[in-house]
Image 1 (cartoon, one colour):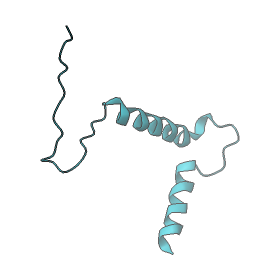
Image 2 (image 1 turned 180 degrees about the vertical axis):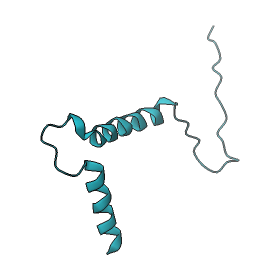
Image 3 (image 1 turned 45 degrees about the vertical axis):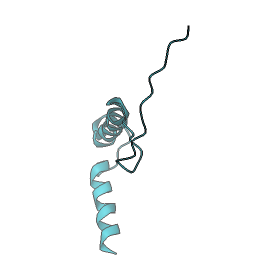
Length: 68
């Protein structure tokens, strides 16, 4: 005898597809972004660092782009 399978009825009342991501699907990219940002912000470890830290250069570049 076969066991009946239980399937969920389609979500016709919502009018769209219900997609749920696990918590780590957002946490991992955020963690990677923060880690890379910290690498950019810490110029003390860079032996060939320029006079200005990377963050100051980045902010200056953003200011130039928004001024146009």
